Amino acid sequence: MKTLARAIFWATSLTLGMIVTPASAQFVKGNEAVQLMPDGSKRVETPPIPKTSAVNRLEPCLANAGCYPGPWQMVESKDGLVECTEAYARPGACRASSYGKTKTSRLWIVKSQGRWIQCQYPDLKSKCVVMFAPPPANLPYPAVQ
Image (cartoon, rainbow, N blue to C red; front, side, top):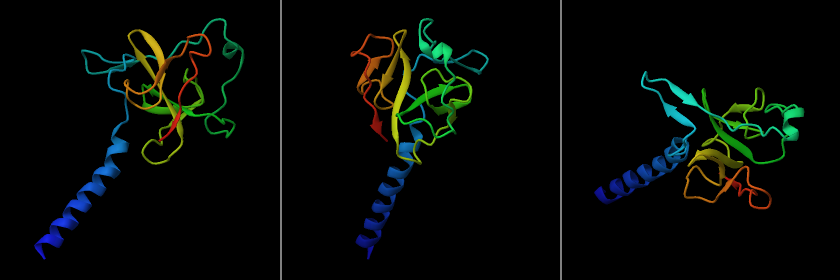
């Protein structure tokens, strides 16, 4: 009976760990875009829109409009982690994160070593590409997560 109880305990612990773990990765360790200030507040940067980009002339696909077919761009904002239809996180383009609740294709937008990069997972050691590099070097590696 003790053996069965131990087996149930470990199976339950492992299952709960699997449930909690994905939802706890709500940030990318080493993201320079997020800075804690001395007063305890958080300062967050988002990628700048290139001056010569067509994005300047277009309205973003709204996050709740259902018009976005690509991977969700996971961006740290002043409100925490959000998923956006674009890396620039313009008003209306983002919604609350569903990471850990819904499986969908995602990219992680991160600032590292002064450059904006897109990473496959919330980990700087995953496949990452520089956002503003010329094609094809800037083609990202989205993953369902």
